[in-house]
Length: 117
Image (cartoon, rainbow, N blue to C red; front, side, top):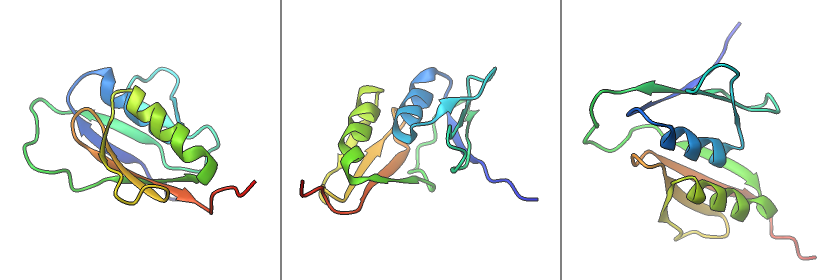
């Protein structure tokens, strides 16, 4: 048996969890303020481990979140509204780099071509 969990080291506070919840489309695990799970049970759970002081170097792990093309803008907007910031949109329409309030990065990739309607 194997399980996979992504753990993000973070300072105390709900702002980081809110960003990741909006970005991933996950929900909180019942009874836990620091765990997020995929409601569709396809992705690994995320756990937020409390740090006691900021880490000055760049994070070494980031998440790549791939969503259908027609959902990318809404997912990015939700993550920004939850306290995230846009790091780069140099490859907009297919990839954006966001960061949570502590600077941990995540890439949002759009799967498939835009709907030609």
